[in-house]
Amino acid sequence: MIDIDKWSEIYATVKKHKLRTGLTAFGVFWGIFMLVLLLGAGKGLENGVMKDFNVAKNAIFVWTQRTSVPYMGMQPGRYIYLTNEDTEAIRNQIPEVGIISPSSQLWGTFTVSRLDKNSSFTVNGEYPELPYVEPLTIARGRFLNKLDIEEKRKICIIGPRAQEVLFKKDEDPLGKYINIKGSHFQVVGIFQPVGKGEDIVQSAQTIYIPHSTLQQTFNQQNRVGHYKLIPAPGVASVVVEDKVKALLAQRHQVAPTDLKAFGSANVEKEFEEVQGLFAGIAGFSWLVSIGTIIAGVIGVGNIMLIVVKERTKEIGIRKALGATPWSVISLILQESVVITALAGYLGLLAGTGLIALIDYLMVKFNAEGAMFSNPEVDPKVGFMAVALLVVMGAIAGLIPATKAARVNPVVALKDE
Image (cartoon, rainbow, N blue to C red; front, side):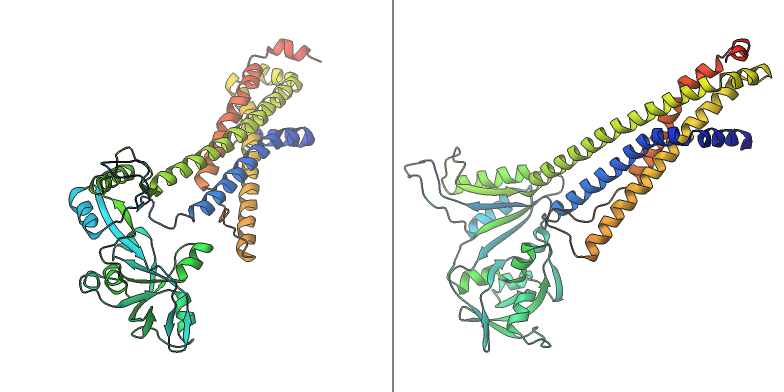
């Protein structure tokens, strides 16, 4: 049941000392405001960085470099060429590999043409497993399939840039042919790149053809440029990375101590490092904000001590008239909780409002940068902070409330 008298007394006390109460509550308000702002900014930074991960979060890339250690009579500086047999060996001998997608690029100076239009594009030989590693959206048509690889079909999937340059505005590219370095390829699909900034620009200028077709048509027989791998479920990517490099070293007679013969990129490892960085940023935000909040709560405790001192005679009269210690304690505690909770809630509203305004302005003016995007705060975090404030407010008011409950009515009535 709501005690109207208690709420009236709290309102009267706050109204009587508006400046003192406001300045004290500002410390709590500022702590919550800074917490929300720092967490929101940290999330915006995290969202911006995570957009750079436009590949599977556990992807592994392995390629060859020159050897740096002499081994079995062979001198350093030897270049290693990956082959189709290496692909089969990885599939058959490393069960930890869930997905393997061999990839090669068509090198040299050439143009892609159609009728009287031509331009330079990146041409990659890929496998149907590519979208599991590097996500892309098929806007129309289809991607590569198993029969394309087995039959070495001369088909291609083009990006938006190739469509814009080689075809008329209202022309349907599907089923049409383009000329790649003297060979005609039929367009069977159109993809939209996934990513941002330069990644989208580069991907938009890529043309995909079957890996086996690239090998046969452009004199890259039995050559693989690099591997794109995904571990089997439950397997750490570092395990796959180490096993693949060890197997390739064994097959190509590379010294086990040669760390430069094979290059690799472990996206999972990089992703975990970035996640750890942002966990540290969030922890720092909480540390700074909690320090400010504690300072504010201590201020609330001090103001409640002053309130008890000012109302000593009133409390003495209450007790002389039969007020129980709990009724006195609850009055002080309720006032302390109200001040901290209200200040914290206002800080939460101000912080989330500012974050929402920043997000709105960034979207409106298309100002999302490469390192900052979509700042936001988990509502659960905000309300958890306010709930914590209520508890801290009760603790802050506990000492003054206990002191008030111990007031001797006789002594209090003599207090001037």
